[in-house]
Image (tube, rainbow over all chains, first blue to last red; front, side, top):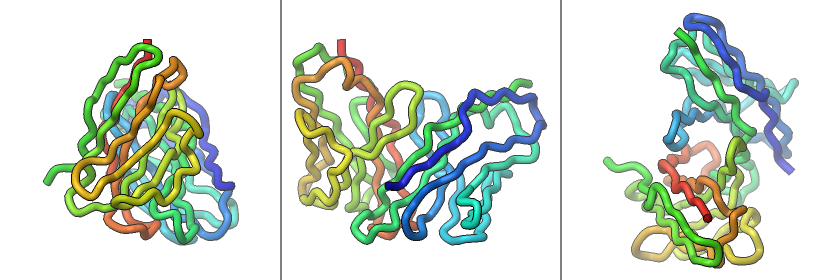
Length: 115
Length: 115
């Protein structure tokens, strides 16, 4: 079955530091890949996505590239802010025809940015 | 333009009681997904519904859990005879269609506590 593995947190950084969160996946077929962010007490918000190999998703200074050869979708940001403190989830959508937008999530990585 | 609305936000139930969680999708969305998030874990898929039909319930526990999405009104996730292990955050998501690239919008979740 499908699975997503992402690095465990918490990740603690200083403001303006470089952030990388590793994500690898296992899937049959060609899934779409997503990063969602969850702020404290809130639901999930889509951060970025990539729908095919070599696509780069980007938003709010975050980037991730769909690497089919390494089955990875690592999230990066060059200079984090305190407001980026949140839990980040890597996810894939099931490419099965009947699956709709059913998502398989990684375990989440908590990021804490200190001023 | 309201997003996905879930209520209640917090629900406390005693062991053996019933819990009913409601989800109103984004206006015009007919595809609804329920996920469960246990403490410090990622989200796990439970069920996928499309107006009046259950499309995929592969993540639903075999007993005590049921879901519906009637022609009129919100989607309901029902948990009968709750136990402590049901304590979790339950998230609903909706999408416009079943294309796996379509963004799924998440509600803020219902946090169920069983005492």
